[in-house]
Length: 352
Image (cartoon, rainbow, N blue to C red):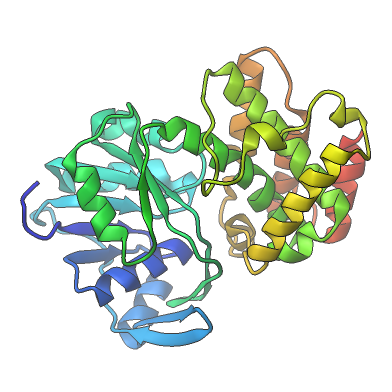
């Protein structure tokens, strides 16, 4: 990787990819945005990137490509901003354009670094955990729904100067932390996403409205508890989310799972209420995918938990029920609603 400004490719211009691209274009970085979605490409080329952020709106002049010629100059960083179901195909399609000492950077939720590592080698993969939210309001129109930054790291926990270069690149979007425990940070974020993104897909509403309901908070606690148990079985040391949310603490104890009220449960519900208030405008990317007729990422979130729990000889019934419900929505057999979310809660009370 040269000492010059890094050449960067962004793959995927949904909510996250659009916000990242717009910020990097404003900083006049050497960036190439890539989308295979003609509607998005046409809108950006005609109107630019329309960004809604911090109560204000602005337009960033459009730049986008639909494909890359074989003789494209290699990229130092390739930022994968597709949904998880497309991440492996996306990585394979652009791997030949990665410089010999460049990195693929996974911005997806879930444990996608382990999925793309066989494509380019684990030593060429960086995990990029995003602590902010974004939605695509329409082709080329983006809303940043919450503030926050990034946590980046390598699968083996090692450090080199290229991580610092990526951090500098991303700092115009939000603060960047470098971790030597990517798996711990990833599993903690997985627990959050299994609750927030998937329950948002089932309930069909933004996070603040969802977490105002006690039964939704209880479902979230049950989901996160199962993820924490999987992490323990895999020997993962969990990291605090955004430096404050301690998943080891928020996980329900065996006694609490049988209770409906206690001092500890009041504290855990209170924490989720605070999360709902802070990120009240956050909208599930999985819900957006369902609305657009795209495959939901539930197999990469709750499904990952179910599969790994089975590998370790125990069940994750609440995550399994969520996974089945999201697939039912995707097949058109159910419709996202608070009523559906309540039925999910009632059905899991006898299994959790």
